[in-house]
Length: 163
Image (cartoon, rainbow, N blue to C red; front, side, top):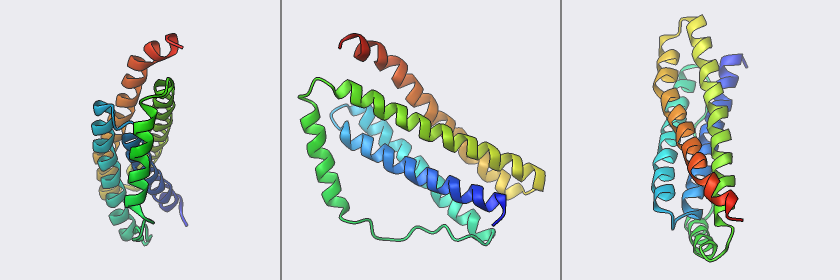
């Protein structure tokens, strides 16, 4: 496996992981409408990135197709919803949200580094399709990072000084 294929594989995994994390955070903080709705939108971006990476990987002889069958998604969603409802009545939901935002930020930052690596390799190889993919997807990843950073800056003073 060459370095480009390895980067495609790692980035595909990272985007899928970030999409799952964003969805889980949206469910866990369902009562915070901004977090809930924005996180779901951002998860959609990562799912789209993963789909586009799969398509590109096919052209590079690499199979990154998702396999169907997430076990009991409705059960997991119901469990997350009940957890979110329970968290509203606890004094630490702000700390949990800060932790979640930190983890999301780190995941998006890791993906950003991989997008940059992929873009640089594409330029070196003069692969316009690969460069187009990185150029199209990387800005959305940077926006994911800006959102998490902004939310951390907004929430940290309130949460950390009220303990």
